[in-house]
Length: 123
Image: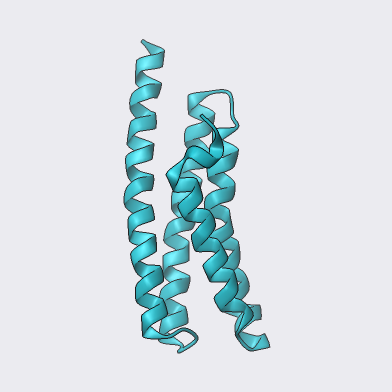
């Protein structure tokens, strides 16, 4: 299996590109405060998935998958702040919110499956 075969990886890459495209449209103050934080957290999702994928041990990989999930929740916070501060439209908010929810469900399922493999491997 290759990294690009992981649906959570490709979904997270798409999400972070959409965040980037939105933030580029903002004024300097918004980009410098919320924008940079949101781009970093969105990019961190796929970056940590790929780092975990490249690790040799299940335990080491799992640590990075948990960090990716934490970055996903952080991205949700920045999405909410962006909408509340009128930096993105309601339509954009709903689209990105739905994408994050799907990614979150798939990330949780991936982590659960990975845990099962970890337990199976240790027996």
